[in-house]
Image 1 (cartoon, rainbow, N blue to C red):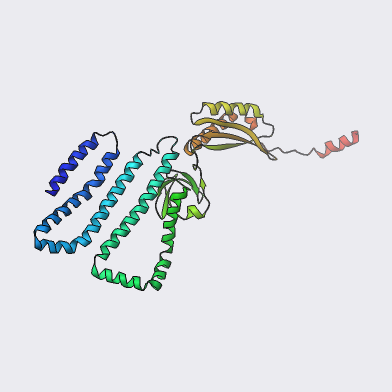
Image 2 (cartoon, rainbow, N blue to C red; image 1 turned 180 degrees about the vertical axis):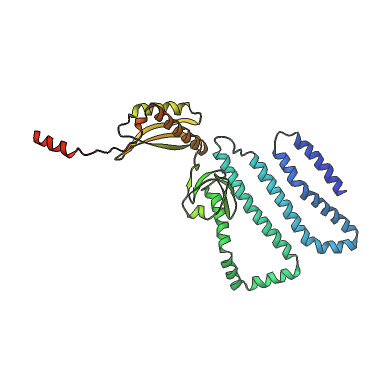
Length: 335
């Protein structure tokens, strides 16, 4: 009867969720289906045990161990269903996704911490229901001096990372999908755990970084406030090169490129060397991916244009050959 009631109720709920405009309804129904099925079976066993004395004595022994596990499972299912439903509202595929990334980061960290606490309490209640384990636990509590110090020393790295995860959720040095530079590697924050962070490197590798490093060490976060970035292309030209036509061509190329966001486009001579000058082309784009492609486009286009229209602008090595000795003597006599 319990299974039949569960099947009927959730069949109705699935049909309602299927015709609902909100995607969170499907998530809630999917996450709660299995734990509620087991809960109804447990409820049916309780009702049957009350009527059958032989089953009641057995159930009383098992219930103290099974019920905490069942309640913890339902609590985890409700937690994950709510988190997934709230994540659906935080769309990080849009262009300006800073608020959505912050929300997803907080939800992820809250989910990790709440899951740890629920599992910890559930396992503790299950173990306390066993008489032998309960007696051992009371003995350890009574003599918790040296044992507490030993356990505390052994668990210090894990506890530090766990506390760092809580601090990260509060201070937000990074968010999901942030672009960061760490250990010289460019990548995006793919996942944030309570003890470590997964950084997806540009070549599809994953960099696993302890959470505490983002609070104790320096790193670059390119999208902390906004995804918009500035980038440069440096051209080394001959000191005799004409800058005006090159600047005009750069402005024409940058305005015609769809990856440019229309904010910044500047061409300046930023350095002079003995054999060349340094022309810096400054440009802007909506995000780091667009900026990388834009810089490559402009670099290739400008090199092609200079090679076709003013090849003399490329740097050249000039050697001043000394005059022949005979000519030098004749010039002195004539003087």
